Length: 163
Image (cartoon, rainbow, N blue to C red; front, side, top):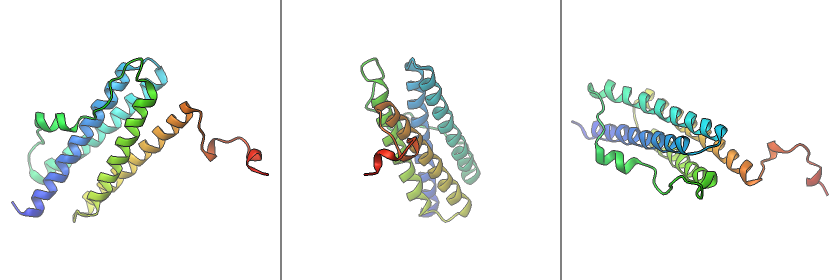
């Protein structure tokens, strides 16, 4: 196997593991929280990440002519750690971790898109980076809403900004 093909396999496998970890994390949050709106939001995020996994696994099968088989150790390493959802942890902590995870996912896909040669795979990675950025923005807005913060597009009036 050429060195480039090995790098490509590593990029795909790493991306798949990241998506599995994110899917499982969002599912754990969705299962644990009581708020129905929040539960649905994290369930939808879990589904999005699973969709990314499916896309990436199809690319893996296309290029390497075999199905991707996840290794238990790699799955454990891919899990998003650092939070245990309970009444004390709450939504803010979960959102903070999710925001950081989405930012890292976007950075990962952007950096990998810069090094791949295949234009279709490059396009897929760039699209995934865009989707992860969308998740990041959505989670950040949710966090700001819960914290009582706001963005300029949330304002009804700009009167208080004027002297």
